[in-house]
Length: 210
Length: 210
Image 1 (tube, chains in turn green, cyan):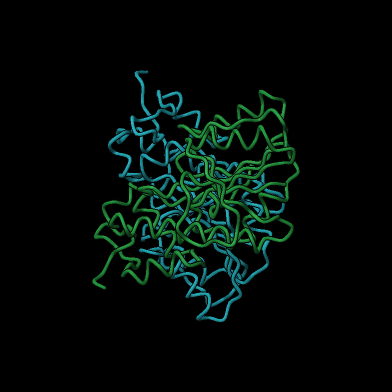
Image 2 (cartoon, each protein chain N blue to C red; image 1 turned 120 degrees about the horizontal axis):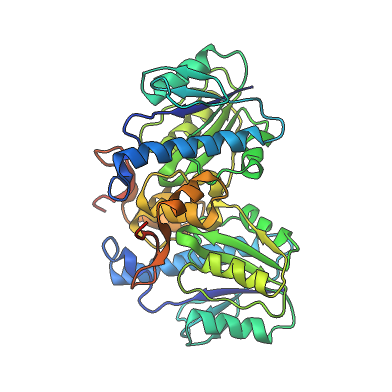
């Protein structure tokens, strides 16, 4: 199996602009990537991942980095088309991913295994069917479910809150603070973020003075 | 074991006011309740649930309804204090709940089993420790994790996107449309809701003319 973690380090996580500076967003995206790579490396039976990056990286990682400047969908589809093995694709912003959660992704032997993301995305997948291709645009989980059916692939869906939580919006930071076990949660705390409550009782990541 | 589904039918789901009328919100809350009761009834080994309602219900349900007009926390804590059996508490707005997901809640034999909800809530729990009490206010998942530790209870956490998805906000409706297998998804489709995409590529439940 080939395990690929797509990563786009140029102006990442723009929907966090209201709470993190551009430099902080780049740093936070890198910390989340390292959390994902670390969780994968500790997942029993999973081969070493490689990073599929849109540009060459200035950080030292313990894994191979393949640079492909195309958009996510064609870059991943090129891996799917050229690989002679099953391919797993795990997003780089799954700050809650643990080996236990990831193990469930790899434990199924279905032709296509999907871990849905919030907002109807696809946060992780395993493709064992030679004709399956991705389309990450829009409601990708629904599209991938249909794409699997269209090529006659058996499908399994991983029901995981940890894998469903990609970190894109300020509301997602509260999930990292509450459930994160890796460096991303520490990084947020070091920058003054803590769980806080608004007047209506809703819970958010609130930034205090550092 | 005693299985309780708290329900508050008076002006429910106010955060959906922008997309559903008051009458629709009452109806939708009732449809979700019936989905949860149906999923529980189809979960192997789980006794018949009862509804813990703030007012008497004008709808016919196949299960017992206990009326307690207090707030959620004291009403549930009264059940915990008075029951001589383990108690399960499952929220009434888990429109994605399936027997497979619920089975994981009941499969653990830990003293306290928690299924976190988005926004750091607690969407379902099983309490087998006589001293464990709930506090649903604020970041209840974190509080319940601490409360379990304080009474010396063993803890298990169920990592489920289906159980983590309580339906409170317009953004949650897209989850129901994409993943819902029960009447709530059909109810939304019958009212003209469908998955749609905004200019930035994000996915939402969009309401078309009926």
